[in-house]
Image (tube, rainbow, N blue to C red):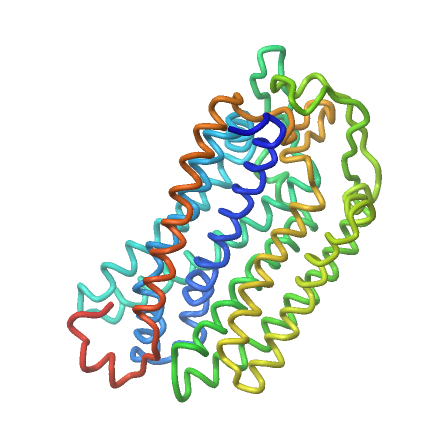
Length: 378
């Protein structure tokens, strides 16, 4: 169907789009959950917040599941290396995601203030832990993971969970949280009324400022950390083997792609300008435009990281020559061709039913609606 190098580039793009799809669709779910104990001061407000995401949260997680499956099939060595290096962090992320369905489904089953408060804490943690750890994961990828490969391409990890917690990764973790807070509060502006709407409006403006400030600091830090540069490598159509290349590290190297391809600057510029646009639109009560800006800013932030690292996927801080790139860590040409055919059918289906669910469930919620349907809602 396609040449091997084209297939590799297609799957770099597709997996990036799946990650963006997850962050754009599930970002506001996590943001609303994280803000539940803060903005929801009464039981009615908390139920409005919960039911604003109720029709969508489970379907939105399809993007993450699909991205995980695509990673396993298209980049098996990346999958193995990531889980070997970030196993505990990924387990904590999944544990955070598990809390959400448990708390949402069982919160209203027991008529107890203590039980509901416990479920609210679980929902809040499920909205805070995953984006924080996702941000930390991207930060550690930018710094390089301490792994090496033997002659059989078996992964040896030389780090620890605590080593993943460093100033840059903690900053990126806060960026992840501020991203979902911005999108979550903008979503609540679309879905709520009265007092809760005003609180969401204020939170949107504050979150937008946090995103811009934290991203600016992160950008300055990236320009001073060591990036990775391929010095010599086989042809892009060669059989995958990450041991057959030469890589060097260089301070500020992660900015070289932006110098080489000036159009890539659109991503970091969008990452900074779109939150400012959301802030201004929230102030003017342009709810839909504020939410759109917050969603697009999430996409631009992920694109910025992807463009900076291209073609690297998982750099190695122990032996840079063992770093994994999209040119030497993919499945076979036949596998990628088959997967491409499947993706061209399934991804549009996911997009269509996601769009249909949002169109069907469009509209605002208020306390009166919750009271009228209190026995059938979360």
